[in-house]
Length: 289
Ligand code: ADP
Image (cartoon, rainbow, N blue to C red; front, side, top):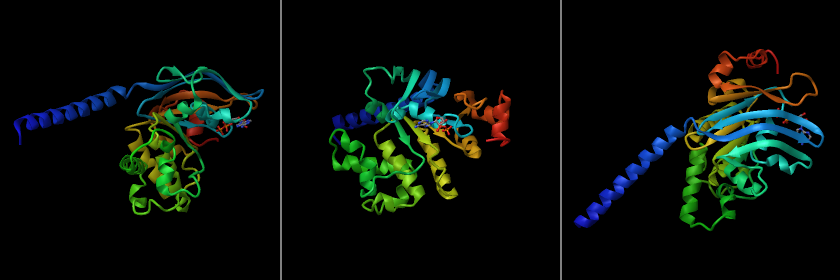
């Protein structure tokens, strides 16, 4: 090999190694960083106050679980993290929600951009009908800049792998998305969310309608996902929250008719072994809810 070419190649390898090191360092460093900060959030549906004074930090590359009895505002809260509640007429928030130090409710912020950075997976899998598995995954990115077929292929393989679905569908990418099982459809929706490269993924009870095997696969995918993304998940399944999350927030309403509040928030280990508040303990031990 031409010595000049050899030096170029060595430099390239070194650059790649440096990049790998620096991204690994960044990942370690970012482990304690917050990606979203919620300050004194109140949330209303018309004149009905659904949430009061919620403050919470979402840590980068961590899974945050939201638990609590039905009607305490978990879905309402998670939707406020990407302005999804705005599709409900009369729904509004007070307070601040920061994503990387930017207030997502500032008047010049485009909600569509917020929803690309903070993606959402819903309770019921909702792949686009009459669209192939492949097209479902790339549906979001097709709206952006034009990409080469090879680049799209790479994104499809990468995101389906991250969503723990690739091996099951790699030979039938042209089949319809809705022909998959419920659990596979949900993982397809996760891949579709990942394809637009969000920073945060919100999941509202993503496994509640799935069988135990599919639930397990979603949980496996979560381990993989948090290496790259930050995840906030609403779940009614206490074992699931304890297994998959690093932090847990417990939402609670003390007196009927009151708005929901974030009653306690802490490391998942502490929340499930020695929470500070009695209501949290009663809930995580299954005494009510
Ligand atoms: P959770 O997710 O904890 O079950 P929700 O966020 O769904 O709680 O609901 C919190 C409160 O807000 C409940 O009293 C519920 O009835 C009310 N709520 C939820 N969605 C709407 C809506 N679209 N319009 C009016 N009220 C709503």
